[in-house]
Amino acid sequence: SPGDFLWADEDLGLPWRCSEQDIQWFTDAAFGMFIHWGPVSLTGGELSWSRDAKRPFDIHDGKPPSELDWNRTLTDKEKYDNLYKQFNPVKFDADEWAALAKDAGMKYMVFTAKHHDGFSNFHTRYSDYNIANTPFKRDIVKELAESCRRHKLKFGVYYSQRDWYHPAYLRGDNSEYEEFMFNQIRELLSSYGRIDIIWFDSFGESDLGKDWHIPELISMIRRLQPGILVNNRLAVLAGYNKGPRKYWGDFDTPEQRIGKYQPERAWESCITLAGHQWSWKPDAEMLSLPQCIDMLVSCVCGGGNLLLNVGPMPTGQIEPRQAQRLREIGSRLEKYGETLYNTKAGPFKPGDWGGSTQSGNRIYLHVKDAPECRLTLEPLERKIVSAEMFKHGSARFNQSDECVEITWDSNNNRYRNVIILTCGE
Ligand code: FHN
Image (cartoon, rainbow, N blue to C red; front, top):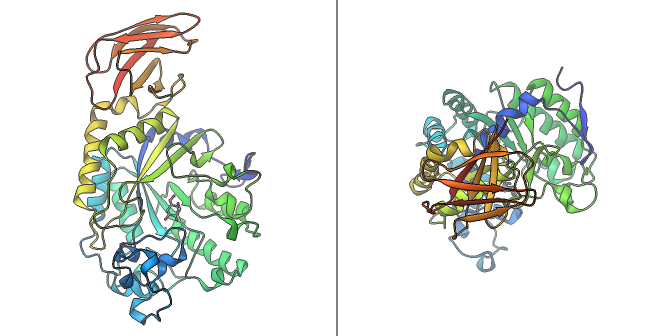
């Protein structure tokens, strides 16, 4: 049964197991919603690499770190770890978030069950530092898992092995902290029905080389949730990162591959929609629609997915202008979705011109930059039988052993022009 027969990911030396069917929904999905949320949203700040992010939220006041008085003795109320006592997102509605993900054309959601701050957005028995002990009380993971199921979205939990609250982690007591981590992961994978992804996130010098029991953890994960996808950021924590940084699950820019779910089988890139920050940031600069489209199309042309992040407000709402951007993406996907969903990377090498996807006997050329309405691409083994512009307009092709030439009437789309090449059986 799953979890007993593990095979090694030769890159990282870790045992993974996914069947063809397990991974198919993911490679078809193309696009998912990432959500970073919790008491951190009260700070308008970021819980990224720096533990300084845990400094008192009220002395931030938008001041740059250089202007903060880091030595000031903090009142109890100011300490980050007490923020949860004020966390009461009364406008949170899981169905609203799930419906927005659907409107955006997203097929799955990954939610921060526990981020680096150690706060659990679910009713855990293993730490009082959790949502049950806030004024809000409700189990966010439970409500989102159920809502995603109602909306036919796959649901994943993000879990940070790094934990800036747990005393054992902070004092480097690896075995005590690991027991806590195993227990929480067991809770997450036993108490909320089907979980489709567990998305681990931490690595870094301070975590490397510890004797973590990763193969045992993956075995437990697979026994509890057969078919679940496990991303590759678990690997490095155990010091499995062999060789250069490229094994460290480098990440977070569309050009780099992250979250490799299986050797060369599936990957995704994650990026945040607003403010270059994962959690809520007021008045933040937001990615434009063309930027979002470009990232999504580049990922899918490369055979991966885009996991686009939103950081909801402390009220429990996703900021209306971010929601609007997501809906704009969704309306594009309503029209062009067939060229991205259920496809795999196309046969042509991506370039400044754009990239390609393919499905069955169709190759979709996502042309980003070809002002002369002409493309010359490398030769293709498959025999092309026709060329047409997606939805409207005609195109022509000339195929030789040296190259494939395509011309079309006119560029009639602000973002990308899609040309379909139909190949013989
Ligand atoms: O520090 C985190 C960050 O908050 C976010 O969760 C990203 C997602 O890939 N991972 C870490 C740094 O990038």
